[in-house]
Length: 60
Length: 230
Image 1 (tube, one colour):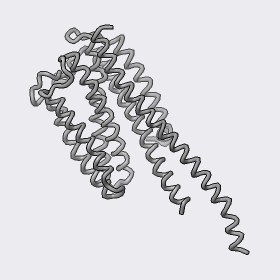
Image 2 (cartoon, chains in turn purple, brown):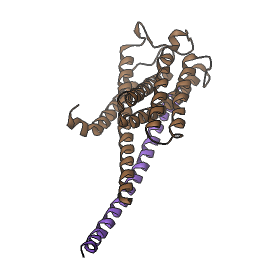
Image 3 (cartoon, each protein chain N blue to C red):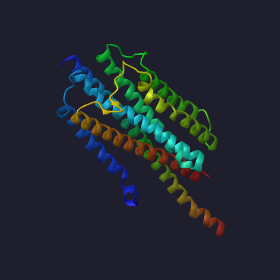
């Protein structure tokens, strides 16, 4: 590999690695959002389960 | 823009970015001739210049959205402006690093302070890097949106200065490829350049929409959490 080839490969690798790093960051963020959605769904289910009991007390 | 395109925008953009990127790599490697003056190292040009031009585009897009914040009181535009500037800074990093590598092989140095275009691009990059310090030092709300919008609009004035610096200052170190006589390269080189630029713009558009969708989702989840906690 000549010196020019090494520098050209390095320049292209920089672009590739920056984009890859960006995609990895986005993927991590997406995983966090997925976790949060699951937590919120669980919270909503719990609230829904408590809701009829509250209503029953109010009516009674 | 039709509703169907809006819904399918991200997959369309991602497909276009992949296809154009593949085509650009093939054109750069096999179609564009090796430069008689600089040799193989000139191939860096096909990514370095489009990355820099895309960074300008992203800063310009960020400024346009900032203008909408101030002019139309468009609240959503604040986030769009922020994401565009964030992308612009990422493209700015790529411009500086690929430029530095090209400088090392062409001029024998990693950086030349005597080149006005290089220094002005660095100033533009640092100006937009400081945007994040401003944004995260102010509480979210209309005040922050206004301050960030004004800052983004000031920054956009540096773009024509940076772009024209080489022409105005007779900079002999940094090459001038696009002059008033058109592109100073062969047809095949110009084709490779155009496809590479289209690929990088499509990639920027894809990443812009991905990041924007993530930020919007994050904000809506925070809102939902507050509603459920109340």
